[in-house]
Length: 119
Image (cartoon, rainbow, N blue to C red):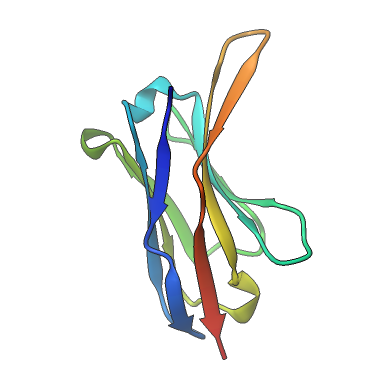
């Protein structure tokens, strides 16, 4: 059973930075892709950034140029560096890992970490 655990959330002022971590219970290269999602109160969960096994990345338009997704295979950990934070970045941030084959996909989620950006 895959386990993911996020850390690094907290309260930060507008313009500040945070780095989120997502530690996996096994090798992150077992996953087809990993990603960061967020959910603000009253809103749907949305993709923030993702990285494939090969290292290709993509970002939501709202975070391009401010957030960077990365990973460390030796530590089985994925990161999200968040700079120039805005109040609208306030949300619970979730880590997701995807596995599967041609005809199926299995997603694993972490419990989430709260990020609050105060103005």
